Every structure is written in C-alpha cells, then in structure tokens.
Image (cartoon, rainbow, N blue to C red; front, side, top):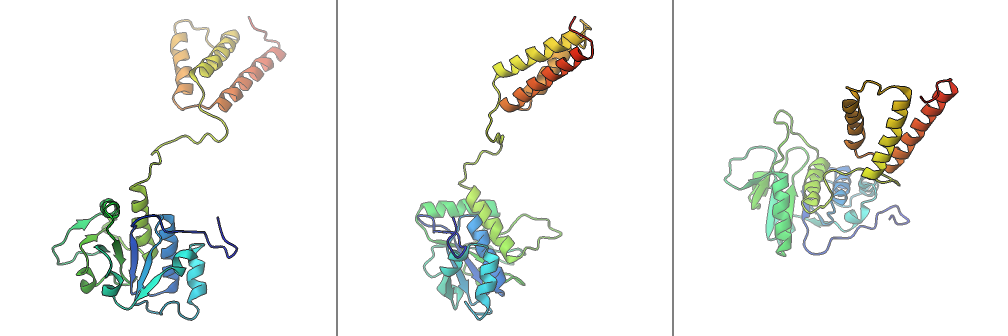
Length: 266
C-alpha cells in the first residue's frame, strides 16, 4: 500500500533487525537505491556516516527519493553520524562487507552464513549492524577494526565489482530468505488446480477409445507400450484440471472431424 505521496507504508520489523550502515556514501542516488534494496529484504534501519554531500543536502531529496522508488520511509527515518564509532556505539555485533583480501585475522563469512549469524543475534536481542563502505574504495582498515567479522560475497573472482545498492541487496536478500518459508518449487495454477488421478484416467479412457476407433492402436503387440507412453505424458507434468477439460474437448473435436470426413467408428 502506498501513501498519497507514493511512499510505501514501511515499518521496522519487531525486535532487533540488522542496521545498515553506509560509511561515507558519495551520492544521494546511491543512498536512495540502497534504501530500495533494504525494503526488498525487509530491512528498515539506515544509518549514514559522514555522507560526502551531507544529508539531506541541497537537491538531494529529489535524487535520493526518486531512486528509493517508494522506500522513502526508510530515508525519512535514516540517522546521520559524524563518525563510525558514534554510528555503532549502541551495537553489540558489527559485521563489515569486504570485497578484497585484508591482512587481518578475523572471522570471514559468506553473505548466506552472515545472514544466519544476524538472525541468531537478533533472536538473542543483540543490536547488530552491517557496514558498507564508499562506492569507490570500500571500507578502510580503520573501519574494519570496528568489526567483529567480515562478509565477502562468493562471486566471479575475475569480476566481483558491485555498486553500493547491489551489495546491500545481496545482504538484504540473504537475511530475508534465512527465515523465509516459501517452497523452493511450486506450480502456479491460477484459478484451476492439479488434476486428480481419477480425472486423468477419465481423459485416458476417452483418448484411448478414440485412438482404438481410428486404428492408431491397431498393433496389438505395441499397444501396451504406446498406452504407457501416453499415460506418462499426462502424469509426469502435474497437468491441471482445466487442461484435462481442454484435452477432452480436443479429443471430442478430432472424433467429430473423423465422422464428418466419412470414417465412422468401426
């Protein structure tokens, strides 16, 4: 649902959820696009550390709000801090995204494993944050020194460059699906349903009767195998009740056409 100004009525989820901290973001458009990615993954809390153009600076509102594409409630609630230490002062767990190798001994997670860590921290009531560095160079060594662990996305090692919103989107997606119950595979049936075995057998009986009548199954030795092949066509793909009715109509019309052409049954 959108308000009169086009904004989606977003609200923070109950309990503790990840705080997205954009460290020294450079462009208002990138902040807005990151907010849109957060909304896709059910995240709400956004903190900005020393944004290059200030926040909200002259002309930034239109640019950021446009790329947020309805996620402006996140931008309106965003907090601005002068330093990273101030931004994470109330946090108990801090993870930092780090695309390049660093000379540091520290736990390193994939985005998927980090999402599980964040879910566990939230379940314990711990306030937690994920840091994202500037678009050009990422987090600096001093930023990473404030982190409990690092997050690195397993991407093509020959080209793993992401823009800021893409980096936020990957983390937001993994956080969302870590607790999502959507079946990995399902059949979209619209207003119909998957046909029952009884309905499939009714179709097979109709089809075989007409195939016998036209002589298609006249080879007695091959008939059982041909019938099995036909049955497999309909039982392998979760055919719907609407499709069964359509095929009944096809078989009936083919039979009617055969009668009109002077080739009656028998």
